[in-house]
Amino acid sequence: MENISGPPGGPLRAADAEGGVNPLALYASGIDGSDYVARLAPLLRAALPRVGDLLDVGAGGGQLGAALRDPGAAWIAVEPAPVMQARLRALAPPPALVPAGWQEADLPDGCADTVLAANMAGPLAEPVPFLARCRAWARRDVAWVVPAQAGPRGLCLAGCLPREWHGEDETPGVEIVLGSLPAGDRPAIVARVDWTFRATVPSVPGIAAHLADRLGWLAGDARRAALSDHLSPQAEAVPGGHRLSVPRSSAVLVWRKAS
Image 1 (cartoon, rainbow, N blue to C red):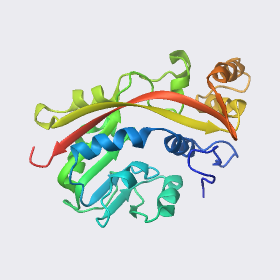
Image 2 (cartoon, rainbow, N blue to C red):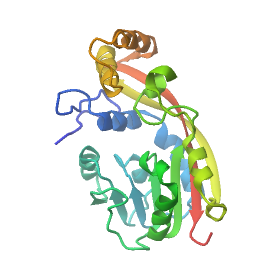
Image 3 (cartoon, helix red, strand yellow):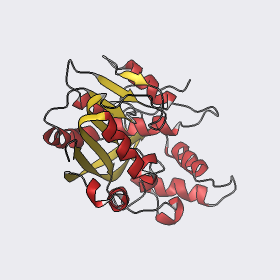
């Protein structure tokens, strides 16, 4: 099973089947080292004064859910990725884990006071059915955190690359979601916050090779060497490796059950 070792925010230690970087572990490590929770949690607490029983959809490593949960209330995490499930099980106390995606999660309607969904890429393509599912699960509130930066939102560390290399749609995710929803499904609260994704990696050439592989560049592609050269000036030397930082923005969308 894929796993992560080392302290939160430290150099990435996860490996995939080929011995390279595990992209989900890279993302989780970057969230650990970022100010994501510090920036998002106060905004969410202000919007959700009573969290109560929390359903964390696409919980990832559980960083944001752990910061928001009410002690003594239930915390249920829906998470399909084994590497993230391992992190969730290692938390103290761990959430009740539903090892499935949001489409497959077998949960009853009204199973939580608050439903949280944060930084999930998949539902951006299906915002209407995703929101409907979350509202059915919620007794009180739904909070959906979506990308708000005008930039890439898929490949981890794509924000370090020029657009002609990463090739992603740079439309802010919040525009996609709000533009897809009927007028009657507009959120009660829309707020935006800036934060910085910070991933510490053992070596710049290693992460450059990983990104080139993820981009589908062939072994002889001249851009591979150029990619390492492009990342080097952005990488900050830190104990145990190099840190790459990417400015990000998130929009917090909140629906009240009565709305």
